Length: 362
Image (cartoon, rainbow, N blue to C red; front, side):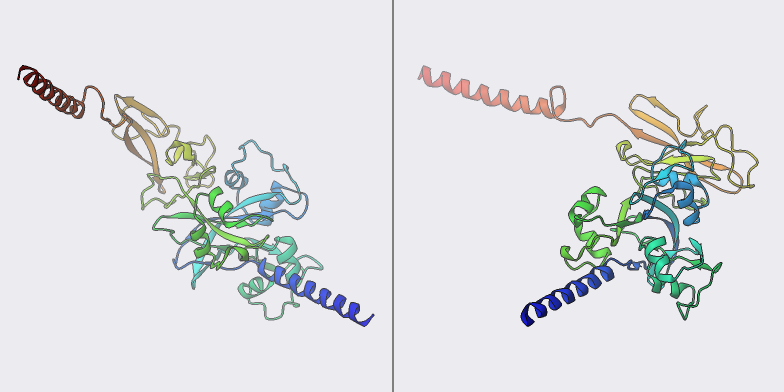
């Protein structure tokens, strides 16, 4: 009986250490960020229990429900008490701060400690493993993790980045890996490459990818006309999402089907702060008669649009954008290339007919 007992103990020990390895690898790791800047970022939140959008909004200190709706491309009419099922994934928008080679959320979200809480419970259960208890302790200067008290306010450092990828500005998205997923599937779904994901996340091989891991995924953003002096520059909106800007007076959405060009129009909402008493009723482009933001005129092959180019403390900025929509000329009947080709064919046939006639006469 001694041998089976030894085998049983060995098996239990292997399972125990395997469990430890799985838990440690599924913990959130810092994202690399060499840029000293702030930017907009996204991260997945897998709700551990049935919840509501308003509860998630409060948990992540999101200023306005519209931001949460836009990040998930939910209809603007969605109610705050909309149910979020257990294990449902919701994308969380937040501001990223880069410093000392890594990126973390900029002082938000904050969490008020409840009776019975400890840092491990807050990290693993409340925030679904998006952070570790060590990371929470570090940013809050907690020397002894057991010395937290109800009503203490803790800064939760979500991982993020503001770095360019391949020379392009992107929105860094903290994607929570699902069981059975692979780097190839994730890359294909979000329009990037396996090599890019491996480089950003310091992944040596595909087998090291673990369910629950928070993966840095770069999302391509729509091209915009927002100028560098605008208060919302750079306005980066990834495909399938929308945002409100210019004190909530403008709504901009990104749709890859529209040539990756940011589509902005007046939101018809009231201003989000006291900078303006009301949103502009019409926003006309300079140099265009009766052409306002979001409208387009077509003259021949030229399609001219009035595009949103940013805002300042006084007004909303616009610019005219013209695109030639005529198809490129390809070789075919009626163009010079075709005529030259026909001339050579005619000359070739003519020479052969002359030679045939001379041969018959001879």
